[in-house]
Image (cartoon, rainbow, N blue to C red; front, side, top):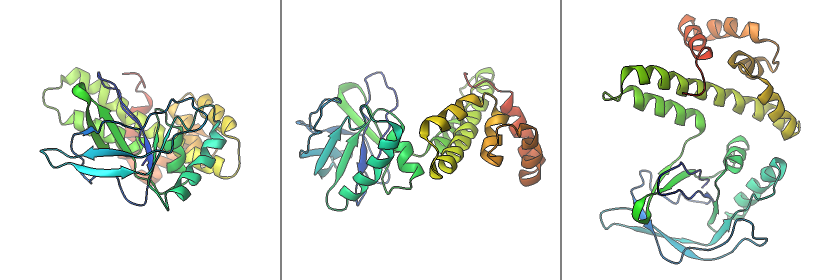
Length: 250
């Protein structure tokens, strides 16, 4: 399980679990962390190898799962290439034991997705009263689309706000998809992580980012609309054009 926490007023706890079976039910319910959770500072040299219990479920029907190995702060001072090496190591360890890794950043989840490591991704939000709400997490593309669809269906949402926020989320989804394609292709063929990230940062416009994803060439932005219209139709082209004029910050 690789877990990326979302911000919440009462704070969040993030974690990653490489496990032969999923930790949470397919539709997780609010639960509570059992007392005596494994302790370990993010900067500790030797991550703890402890046992603990995580109670999931609601309405008095908690599911108790024994955690065999817990790692906290495993990515501290790691460059992206070492994180890439960590993901398969955790997967190998999970063949004999349940492994939980807590994380607050995206590097390990991104590596897990890109390397196709078998892992269950779960987001955990800790709310008031230490109530823990876990839910299965999807990759950023689907997450942005789901958020956009949820807002679009919200009748109470003011129309002027919806017209700004929903297109912004759709643009974020397109950018995430393009960046995922570029990283998978270029890092997969051996290019250094830093160079790939610099290339992505240099693609300031959505059309440049799409050119990287479609043609592996940032300078072919002029060919993007033709390719989208050809493969997706005029409606896809119009939608992309609308997203390209939408600000990322909403």
